Amino acid sequence: MFSLQLRMYILLTILFGIVYSIAVMIGTSMGLTNFYFYLAISLGFMILQYIIGPKIVEWTMHIRYVSKNEDPKLYSIVEDQARRANIPMPKVGISDVAVPNAFAFGRSLRDGRVCVTQGIMRLLNEQELKAVIGHEISHLKNRDVLTITILSVIPIVMYRIAWHFLFYGRRRRDEGANTMLIGLAALIFYFVTNLLVLYASRIREYFADKGSLALGNRPEALATALYKLVYGSARMPKDAIKESEGLKAFFVNDPSNAMHEIKELSQLDIDKSGSIDPDELMLLQQKTIKVSAGDKIMELLSTHPNMLRRIKHLSELKYSNLG
Image (cartoon, rainbow, N blue to C red; front, side, top):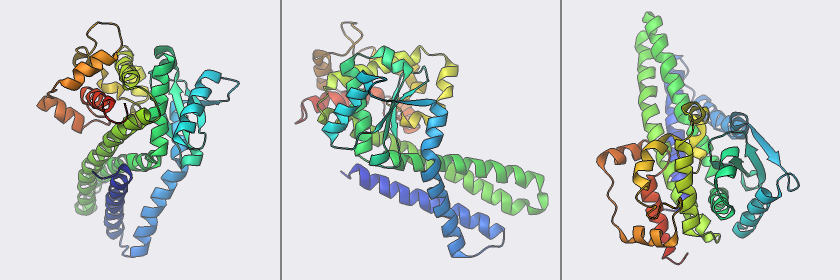
């Protein structure tokens, strides 16, 4: 199996090629044929995203960074997990968002930031929160945060280009053929790049789950945290979910799928305790789960793996050398 880093580099190369292709098409329609111009535009776009990406996340999620004195419990958990992962201590932030979740971002290991929302602090106990923080620390350790930040903006740009040129083509009939061609190409690239970004987002979640266990967190703690996050998100108003829609690829789970996932996950909590204990996880490990064709399509179009599959994966890790 390819390592996470290798997969991310391959995807980054493919998506850079798509950005370059669009730059060539637009430049050619404008009468520009210089290879270095297209290369500079494509690289400039990537560099700009590298520079402003973290600020966009901070502004969108209303993040306030805290010190050890301001929130000793949260800071100590992040500090402990960072020490176990042998990475520099990241900044610790609290997002003024009600949707229960956590996320990590930053330009590099030394620029790492781990943030939690107000909602998750009220929902999880200490062990569950530690397992989630371990998941986010693993994203930093795996160095997938910057890559997904860069990747995630490309479909947005493709969509904007498609909208602009398709609309422009209708307004300027004398240049309609060229602009419509660029618009249609950008629209196709939008769907392709979006699927690639979604794939990258899903595989990194599995690696981060495994990383959390490697840091000493128990599978049942992370499984219960995921279970609670689904139920917590399902109780949120739709407007609250939409507020963070653009950054859900950074989250531990996808709040948009919560209502659907409740039906699947209800079978896991056999004793209706509101948590998934080791015995329930063992029973899941022994089961063969079946995912419907509809759920497979939904997963293909989601930033996160199917939650039942994901917790099943955790149950299998429990009995591996991580357990």
